[in-house]
Length: 223
Image (cartoon, rainbow, N blue to C red):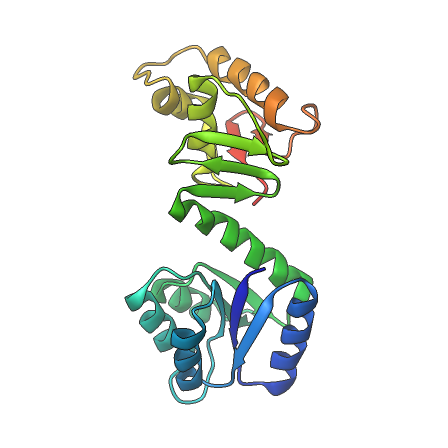
């Protein structure tokens, strides 16, 4: 269960998100201003902060900068619909993602889980649903059971999973996994992907983790 800090000055929005995210299994702390949010941040030590940008007193941009100044706790900002200035400013302040209000709690929960998955790799373990990748011990487990991988298969998985959602071309994978600095044989990549899918996908023919981007390459999901 993740501990979340929700900083939102609108009491109806704040209470609605708190109840909904609690039902999704999160421990949700709340604050109604930037000043209170910073105090709660230092006392609660949350796993992730959901931050409204338009706050009384210290605004969300300043709150985000102060959070970034002391650590790498993920921040998802809440922005007004169609306000590109808020999005650009929030990302520049250090936010990891954004959700446009009004937002369905299920959408916010999905973004929270995606950001937490991406940040999980910071301590050496990347968690993607039932797939756990220990980048320190160089081990992989699926549904709690170890998955034996060849060195090349492991290196391919580590490369793709370091940036979920990013599309890697076959040529780039050849360079990074096989260390080819020339236009190599893309079948090396395709065959290794097939072997890896057979080991980590519940249904290799309908992959969730190693996804094909037709005509270009592969990306790692879910994101």
